[in-house]
Length: 317
Ligand code: MTE
Image 1: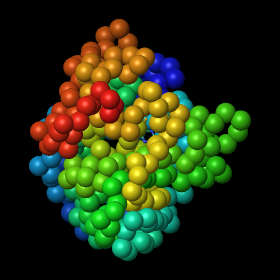
Image 2: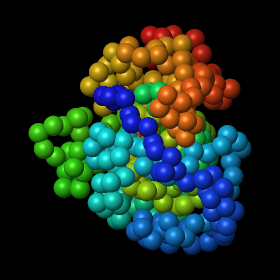
Image 3: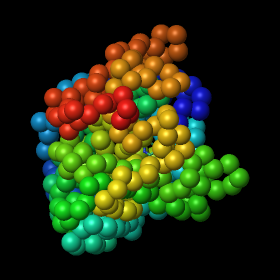
């Protein structure tokens, strides 16, 4: 993941907060959301809507939209932070369907529009802490993953949830050629109780917009705010309920560096760097970059620490 130190973002790339706030204040009406979901990304951004606020949102200042959509990790489009914004526009995100299978009473393949029509989208403003040592605050639009999983009726034998992104080398340049940074498809997993936790969401949009920019994982990506960002798999096509702990992409690549749990934890360093502090994107750059202390469970301990009661978090990193 951290192959080299990421370049800092030039100030010219940054949208003033006043502009972002102003845009949010102008948002009107939630009508037509299902219709919006069917629009190509380029059109959808022009028609933002208001979404219910969530008590789970942080009141911390949101990262500028420009930063959150131009400084990304999405290795299917390349390993540089700028690659996803430059190349992910080629991804066909409509039509899109998601298969839910494995240990469920009702295995099913759902069109994205049907998923969106069956849930209540809301705004969740979450901290995102990347294992590389940077962080952002992103206003996601999404819904609880539990709402979707319940539709498939998980069986009693299901203990974990495995997620997969699609393999489409013709549209994903990172999946072509001799140098393959990762084994595809990108795979992630959660324990079932983590997946059912109310903080765990599937995001369809951000910054008041019902659709995600492709570089952020359009049309549907996971967001698990108390875990390092790589757990939040983008552009999901398959969700499987399974009995055994599934192998994840980063574990397959370097199991000693990237564990299955990957809960944000300032007390457990990555083998190659400290996790005690983080650089909030937008808070100074280069020599002037401020670092702030990293919070255990990324500050969501009150809600999630009980999931790990009695567990050795150093052994289960
Ligand atoms: N999902 C897929 N399919 N491919 C990826 O390369 N990168 C992960 C995660 N999800 C990744 C992915 C990593 S390392 C991070 S930090 C977050 O996405 C970044 O999300 P963002 O670009 O929206 O900030």
